[in-house]
Image 1 (cartoon, helix red, strand yellow):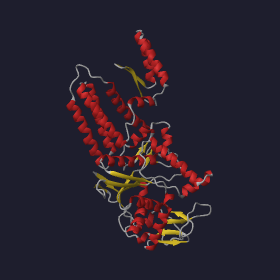
Image 2 (image 1 turned 90 degrees about the vertical axis):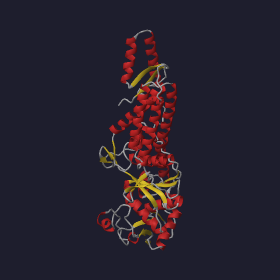
Image 3 (image 1 turned 120 degrees about the horizontal axis):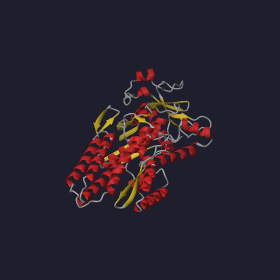
Image 4 (image 1 turned 30 degrees about the vertical axis):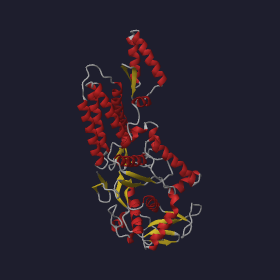
Length: 476
């Protein structure tokens, strides 16, 4: 198994620090608003990575934090006239609701920054004591030039940073590159007592304190969005390694940016979508599936058309599963056991090879569709009872893999089709009864009229040995 390490800019064999155990920290959201499509991508990406590591029989400890004190939080709480605690509680719940809808498994630990203030103060004190930080007028700053390898994650030199990086300019700081570890609180701002007076933590110190306290350092995987490489993760490395004198994290994984209709997502361009916006029109499984269609390190082009494509792909999967449920072996059926065994082996080998290659979900999905294509061929060739029983068992196993790792094929086909109905289910059942009566009375014109009407509504009727059933597709 190989994973791409941002630190070395190459794929490396995955060898955890302790055999059979993976400790993993991912930077979570700043809770001042509803989560957007970028948050959905990062959450689903690292959820799949975690799930695949568990599938490979690693014991995974997964930590994902909430930043619940920050300039944006203070500004937003003042704007809407509620306390920062009320604001963050509201958006932590909103975040959890979104993640639950997307079938993102809850982390083992979800620390809030404000629960680790003492650890942050201790870290600041340690850095001052070691000569890596200094206090000025109630603020504490990290001395970037004192840390020899600063820039090793983002692959930038000190000269490059001075020439073009966005750094806070302050007359108080000894050096424009230095960053805040602790901020003196302004009037009417949240504050905690510290050796330097009332204040609050800087953003970067939060993740260093939480990750090292819960996981210990070094730990195996540190993840987040590509936008966090610099300055956030670079600064985490500097303050953590300066404090402890050893490696902070072994592998650094970063998911790519989200573009909206090929333009970078931003509120100023008006192309900003929250998860809740998207789920008003699309099933959560469609969004989750779509997020897996691009490799996690590549830019993701988000558009309504691409969501519709994802929906159609899931339709094909659920239709194949429904064909399996509908099939009944007959006397002239064939023994296709060898074909079924090849089908199973081909999928598991291809799926594992794809996921072992830096969690290549688009390739894994391609193997799923090869499986679905072959499944349809086997069903059309009419397997006998023995090979059909084996086929059912294989499909059950493949569905479990897809659910346990990718978080897709969450529903039964009937549930999927019902969710797609553009008409009331009671009305549909009534029309099916009317059509069955018309057919019984040999009124085929009436029966065809009902079938055509339902077809316009995206509903296909199937007359099976077990009666009339339906498959519904979204009418868009």
